[in-house]
Image (cartoon, rainbow, N blue to C red; front, side, top):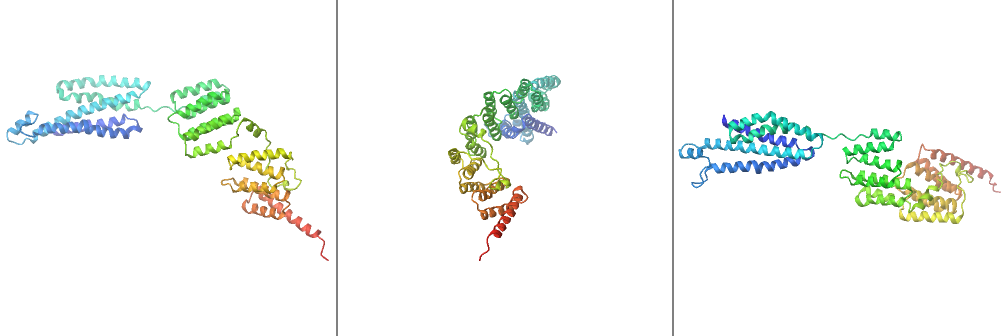
Length: 454
């Protein structure tokens, strides 16, 4: 009976030590803590128990059992197994009680180090409550049981503390809420909105959304782009910032440099950070593509912004030689200069759709080289991942230039029939069908007007 009680109490204490230590550990560290407990149990529980067993087994006449009751049993000539098991179980009880007490005390100290604010105060209150509530029973057991029960008495105080501590020490942080800040911004109270955002970030310093709201507030409403840039870079340096969040933040910073300050050079610098930090990734590739499309300097950016958009016809009346959509003629040297600028951009980035489309129009509509313009449009049509509406419009331009500038009705008809086949149910298809009928009518009229052979 005594053997069963001692073994059961030892097993319960060891199991409580494992279970409560794991509960005191945050979820993301529990797997590592289990591995630590396994090694700790081997070193501080099984090794001392094995040493205690060897001390009492009697290895030779010179190394007699440590406990006198085992020696007496061996000297009596009767079986000494019962005495050995009793001593071994008493040793297991003492070792397991001190192992559990030490493990729980260490786990509680580690968990308390990471607690903050109100959690610390509540944990101290729990320690005082359990100390007063279980202190007297523990002292009574230690007084009447002697030194062999000191570890067990200590566990009477530590186990309740460890059992109730996890929900106190591991309280989940409330996620930041920016509704008040958004409301302040809607009413134009930007300083109060800034204070609300900072207040939320004090409780959750690594919240990416809060950092970006603060940066946008400085960029758009306080007109302080340098401060917004500092905030974005600080957000990118947070350990919890993911690569996609870093890329998003720096792309947005590049937008602010271009749109708010007209500064493509600093925008290029912001995007270069993505390329440097995320080398070899898709995010770095996309940033490099955008760098290639940025204007070289502020003057080139202003020229792009001042340029009038060129309408892309959908095969309407602009197919006619005197269509209303015809681009106004500019001086030839100016058109050649613009074409050279487009060529330089295409050297840096052959996939620059806007530059190639502009070059095609300059060739066809300003420099009287419709063949070169059509060639540029065909290069556009060969680019992968181009939207179907744009492809239909480019084919429409090809057909329009065949008719308007090259006076090649047969080539135009082939292109129109292709539009009808490949882009059904689109405005371009309806206009192409109409133009095919007009070409057929013009062809019949020319045939009737041709004089009959004698």
